[in-house]
Length: 259
Length: 242
Image (cartoon, rainbow over all chains, first blue to last red; front, side, top):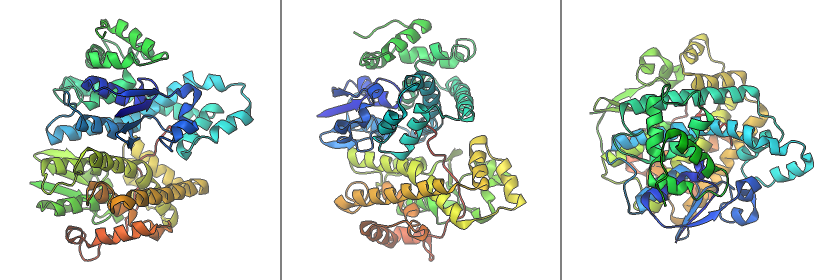
């Protein structure tokens, strides 16, 4: 049995959902409501003591690292290959994912959570927030949530994140000028990793990401959003993510194809 | 022919040297003296602008990032296989590759730097100026000195890493699957330093370090001295948002 414990088809949380839908692998989806901080609840901590999502359990084998999980899904299940066969292009695919995981996705997460999630903590009882913080197992996660809850993210960090996102947009546009997909001629885990976080850029960063400024990235966004597997994964969302994806599709002129 | 630019038998460079020896691959040897920060000299930055070793070159291509280079070697030269015998072992190999990068290497660098109390000379500082922004920022932070609580945090992270290493060893004596793999090869040269930094090392880990060190290919790769103390390194950058 294959079970996926995760939140929305978004960023790390979405990686297994997109991969499994692309490969058409059936699975049991356990929705973990991050907005209610269910990933720090005793029930979920019994699955993953670190309190991070996603967690994927395959016949009792527990996996909690999102990018290695993507490789596992391609490795262990039938369906279209999501990794290049050539070792050098695999190396390229992993470099794209590393750049995304280390440099870009955390920067976007910092910006988005400060914009979207921070306001809900304003005016909250500090003692109550402190109790919530104490439930978070990993010190590095606790530090990030503390900055968010108490509005303590240094402005210089937000500026650096903005710079990194801008640089990444240029970098990916340049990569896509060379090859149709991020790791060569075929769609791969690198594309899934990036679309999981970049899917909303047409609506969230319209001045930076558009058909004129980033023509190759724009065309890639359109091709990713047109894929049935990607659309099916977005349909798994229960919150506003599916709506954001639909808005991006409409801006890109992509029709909904998934039933 | 493979060419390897490396910093000698320590850290990530040791992992590459070991994998090449395990696979019996000949290579053109380009050692760099990390004690003098040769990795920040313009001639090496022309090869890898981030100023990091090891770098492997083959067929006119330049491969950086030790763990991904190990996977490349294993996929290109599958004999003997080191990437894990089944999907679960291969996941575990990838998990450890990631864990070294996110939780072990950067914390080791901080604790080591704090203990060494090194004050770089002007030539070394000039080298930092040649690095890309993210790499330069790490060294600038080191020059300022790490606050005591950050060093404590790094120590706690390494102690936890030691416990997790011991946990995974408990099943079958190696980190991924039934035998020696890239998981052991990427973790071993880092874990071997824990004791010298006063990080508590569980018995299962002590035993594993000894077994790893006795492997013929490891002895061949590391030479008579075995692993040598790392020169100062920094990074990779720890997660910026949890």
